Every structure is written in structure tokens, then in C-alpha cells.
Length: 469
Image 1 (cartoon, rainbow, N blue to C red):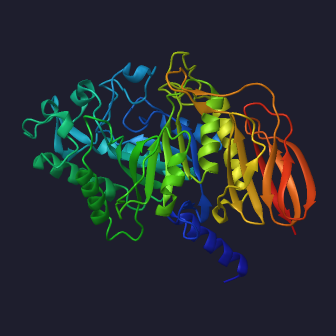
Image 2: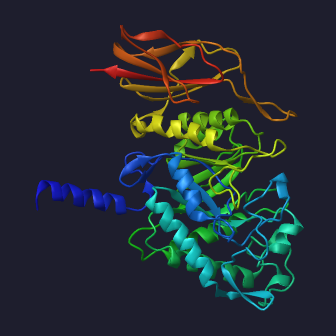
Image 3: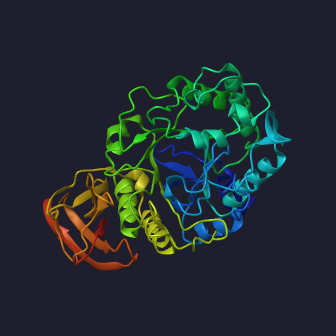
């Protein structure tokens, strides 16, 4: 075999490898043979269960904007039009457009029979995402926030022929109803079987299992994780399992050994990363998007979370809807969140910034000891003596304020006091909104603290400091 052929074979093997934790640093993913951070602004989880949604057009849009993640719900939960104030909600299909994993027999579902149309649609979506280098986070279950969501579920006793008996929505994600648990086990095993060989999928157990009054029980979540592991025990490559921990932050005291990803929602500021960094697993922010419609809000949250050491960011993008799979729907001003082409391009800047550094060799570091403007925050990743990626922003959460997340819009500058070893350095100041490098300089340093002055900026700025050999 020639050297060229050997390299091609090695590249092919790497590209065929399933998503996994990066062996050199399990705080990050490895995808297609490279350490990876997943970043996206994606539709509201209905791309598979909503038959009116054009999957290919949607995935083309994410790929064009440089994003590499989408999150979808499995179909055992859906919403009604108007829920959460979301216009043209992709998770609220019409009854005619709803594609369930279970086969409908007459007016009701048979939870013991599978819908081949659903599984064909799911597998096509995953395959098309893989072609575009996009990872699919498939969330298997979701709590039923209100009775109206529960009444739409195939699991509701009125909607199936399986004689589940009396079943409250508060018990739907617990071990209390043996018949339902057996059906859920079969569903999970079916999912695992259908997804065998898919290399761009991670499986999340349940969306927001911590919601008061409708919690998914801890023993049930651990049971589902075990069922996934058992179902995939003979697979040559297994899917990563994620667990959704809390809104904002919480410390994971007794981690499930089957879980490799710990997801948080609305983690701003990103305290959850530092609190759980010792788990040596991926920490994700896999939902934000209820903080108003302005792009800067979600750009700041993404940079802040990733530069704190997170490896997974997903914003709810309400510009995606059936008929608007290119993300061109004009998000109403009263929507809970935003989205659109400009935001997606800004998040693409973050991905390009990450592509230019060896982030998997870096770790969160307190290298900035001064010079931060009043009311601003700073995060940094560092490989000591070699590279420093620093993000400065003015965003913060205010209680009893709409939107809750606010930021400064005036022009300002900073002279960050950074602790560096002796050496020669190159400095690049990036504009996170445009992706342009606004200024560069090189300087020699004798070691210790030194000021690194920024150009004028609004809202936020990023600086990359590299040692020159």
C-alpha cells in the first residue's frame, strides 16, 4: 500500500468513527477523528416528529452557517400551537402532520407496534445530518408540563389500546406503572436497534426532568440509561448518553456511570461548568432561548459557556418553522427568544475561532487579574506558556427584568492584566459579531503580569494570545 493510500484509509477510518468523548481530554467530544465542540442555533426539536418540516432544507441551512449540532425530540411528547408563546412552533404539528413512533390503529395508537414511516424519517434525518457533519442530539423523553401536553401523548391512556390503567402525567416518567415502563423499555431498545451504526448521534434521556411537580424520577432515569447500555452491549460502537441536570446550575453529586454528558439549560453565567469540571465529562448548555430576541444575548452566552470549558451549546432558533426551513421566518417581537441568519453566522464565528486553537490541550484558567471594565465578565482557556483564549463581555442576568439578560451597547475598551510566562507573544483581538480580527500586535515579555490593550469594542470582544517560537 502506498503512503497516500494508507493516509486515505486512515482518514476514512477516522471519519467513520462514532461520536465519542475525546480520549485526550474527555471534557470535549471527538467527531470524525478531531476534538470537537458542538455549537448551534437550531429549530425547536420537531424536525422528525413534524411531517410538514423539510429536513433537508433545514440541515442545509445549519451546514451553510457553519453549525454542527441539532437537537430533536423523539415524538412521545409534543406541544399544541401557542404553547410557550412560540409562533409556528415546530414541536406543535397538526394532528395530520404528527409522525409518531407508534402505529395508529383506527383512532388510537398501539404502543406495541412501530410506525415504519417514523423510523424511515428519523434515519433519513440522521443520515442527511451526517453527510453535512452535523451531530444529532436525540432526546428520548420529556416531562409533561401541562395536562394539554399529556393529552397529546401516545402514552396517555385515552390515546392507546394498551390498557395502561389510571395514569397521571406526574407518574409517566417513573417506575410506578409497570406496563408503561415495559413499553418505554421496548421503545428505547427499538431506538437503539434502528440507530445502530449511526455515528453522529448522542442520546439524551429526558428533557428537563427536574421540573417541579412533574419530575422524572432519578431511579427511572438511571433505569433508562441502563436499558440503553444493555441494548447496545453488543454494538461495536456505542452512543454517548446525556442527562439533563438543571436549569442554571447544580452540582452532580452522584453521577450515573452510564452518562457521559451532563446538560444544563439557561446556564448563564456558566457556573455549571466549573462546578462539575471534576467529573471529566462533557458539560453542555443544550437549551437557551427564553431571554428575548436580540442576537447579542445568545452570542454572549455561547462564547461565555464555551470559553468557561463547556463543549456543547444549543440556542432555540425560532426563525425555523414548517415552510421556513431556511430559517427565514421573521421572529415576532413578543417571542420568548430570537434566531435568524445573522445570529447563526455569529455562532459560526465561534466555531471558526475554536478551529484555530488547540482547545483540547487547554483548560479554564484565571489568568486575568485586572483591567476588566465595570460590570463586565471574562473567561479564559489556556495552555500555559503557549496559548490563551480570552473572552470579555458585558452581559448579565437581572432578576424581574424583561429580557432577563442585558448588556452594554456603548463603545468601550479594556487593558486586561494578564499573567504570562517570559517569552514573545502574538496578540489577535477578534470581533465575535463579525469574525474580523480588529487588531494584532507582537511583544516580548519578561514574565509576570502585563497589560493587553483592546481596540474599542461594543458588547463583547475576544483575544487570542499565542507564544511565538
